[in-house]
Length: 335
Image (cartoon, rainbow, N blue to C red; front, side):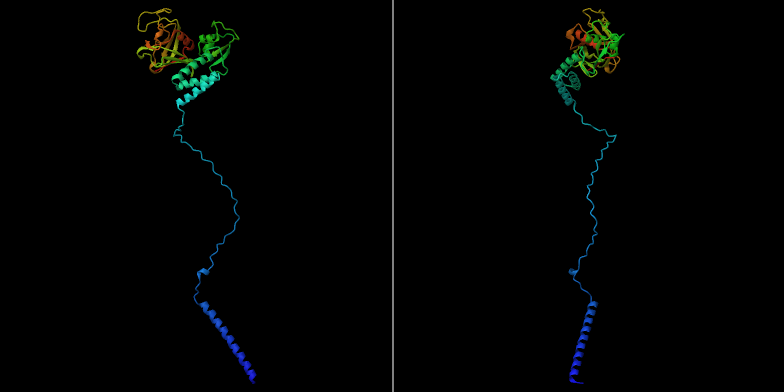
């Protein structure tokens, strides 16, 4: 074999051996890495990814505020309402009454001032209220004038067969009062078709012992007021009385015996009118022989000098006599 061929053969053998050695070295290295425990740097690890499922965003809607639940009060627990004091209410009524007077509104003035008087007004205010109510009462009730809308009065057309006493009885007032209000001279002579004013009774009276006054009302409406004299030693019983008899020019029969004094005698202590009473409640219950009358001693008004009866000036008792009626009118006596 030639030298050149032998050299070429050796080169090829050396190259093959080197290539085989490289292959074997690489295989050992891979085997070593695979079999050795792996030490991993945590900083090189990827953080776990949270997979969020994408959903369509719900349309934002405002949640309606539910209506408040109404409070329910137990029927066993009373509801206390704030009420205006009588003093403040009386002051408001008094102011409304004054305003109505300025407007010449008599009905509104009468209603407000009457209500204020019942609640209580003092001093100069009380004097003003009483004065104005008497004036308005005279003009709206005790005169021929009729104010439209007045609940205390009405118009009446006389029909065939009517008599004044019958008409008066239907409205619980006296025929004397209707005759006086309508200017009728003869109560027994009225004509068919005539229009008259009627008053819707009955009237009632309230006596105040500490002020010596007798106030006249229709319902709750104050109409008139009179000064009175009362029984000595607090002998006028309090309570409610009913009017049972009415007498003109009464004869005096002394309750404790003595001289009987004829009607029209100047010594007759009853004057010209007697309104007999019977007690129905309070200290007055079942009491009789008491009454309201005139006097022959005008200086006794405003004092406690009688034997228990209520006395007025003669002209005042005549006016009261026309207002009160038997079996319907009442008289209340208060301390």
